Image: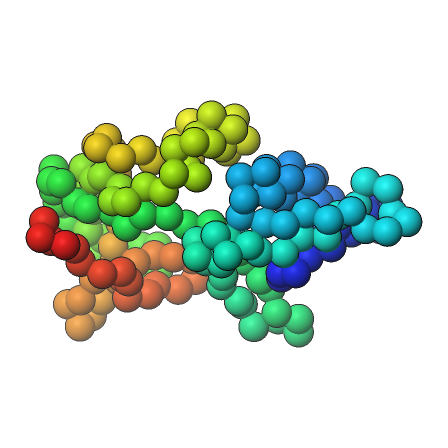
Length: 182
């Protein structure tokens, strides 16, 4: 979906994916409006339908990815918060497979880390129970709590590491490295 967005009522003609997406949006958009990331206005003459747009807070935390490979662009919107700080690398292992995720003779590098989220905003802390109820307990990362994570990289023929982001492509890792001084 793209903002601004107006609810689209369910239809018998919806694909299974469209039906699931509309069900998800009916749960998530009102919560994001309640939290203050979106505005929510009723659509005149259309009971139960609403028009949503980003607030200033929503724009600050919005992550939008636009996939333009299809005839119509696909908009993937998320609200992201707080960079992570790696506290400790707990394990690094490397294994080469004759036939791997992305090709032949692929070397996979698994890195296990412990991390913390830096600068968790108040809207997350104040709404953690609501967010966890909708997205599960692992959806909220609180300040000063250390979390484990395993990262999988593919070692390219150039010797550099790449992230497996989709089943059909690998990309260079992104993000900014923060030090204790930052």
